[in-house]
Image (tube, rainbow, N blue to C red; front, side):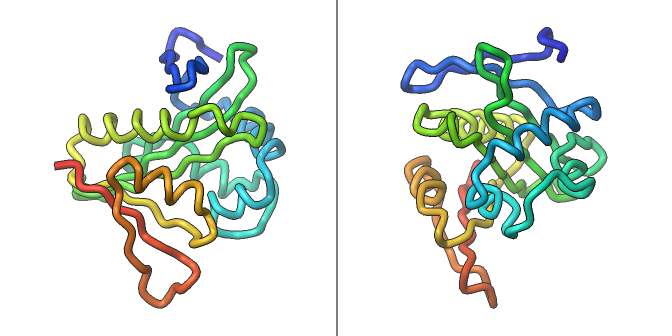
Length: 170
């Protein structure tokens, strides 16, 4: 890992962690994170129950400027991976979708709040007008956190188990 590319973030609880962009060299790091995420959190992140680190999932988490996708990995002070965060924009550069996945043992420290706050700032700097996520209705923690940060919820047509969470950025 190239630690020169990292940013240091500190949560409201005082937990310090490091964030850097995902690279093609991170396949094993991402696989390790998948193994440390609960089955429920994996289902919430990918909106499916499939476990593992398939090539499709790995590709989804890679940064790809051409696809307007940027992904980050978060590490604790021992350099163990604790979370991933992805921002994927539309081709017009107006709207972006955010997704965050946190290792089970790293929850309750403010990592999700801090990552989402970071991505909101990143999206504003990139010029996006709206940030959204699609959530499983049972993902109460994530929906509540996003509401606390100014996101509004709305139903997803023809998908009663899902909710769209949206925030205007400009």
